[in-house]
Length: 266
Image (cartoon, rainbow, N blue to C red):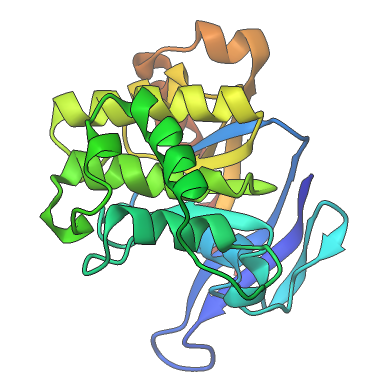
């Protein structure tokens, strides 16, 4: 479903601020794979999602989604295949529009343009049916402006909008980080149910290691623009936060020792 092949991305090339954000990254996701991504700040996690979504284009390498090469496509064209939920609950919605207007926009995404009303009674009922399982009461507030909703309600709506069009790939970029623990737990559960129900191929960036271990069928750890560790299946189920931290310290220590050795040999 998703293939990332030998992707490299460098910012501020040929300047004193040059920074390699991704270095020869390769990753394959089968349909329905749910991969959680962890790593320190600056590891390249969000850059990887930006490459997949078309917001950034790779300097080297290739990205294919469902067999379609999207490497050089701009983000508005990649949106045909990919949906994304951001850390900021307001980022995935239009705050000055109503709930039903936001949902109508999400519903039309990837569909052919036709002449006709954007909102009909049939669509409104469909929106109510989609919102009701969220247990946020949004199905009874279709005319409410999204900007008036709480952070948890906005993120629940953003997630619903992102999965409405049944994207080939769902990108979750620390989408619970800005919420309080109670609302974060709710959005986490809604995410799990939506991904499982629609069998969505998903990449999720998170700083919460417990969340990374409890969700998805695979986990990758990134450091300095590279994938340095991966867990899947029974290994992932047995892993703990303590074992993950120990593995990260061990791998980072090996890298730093290798860098020191290369500097001495230079």
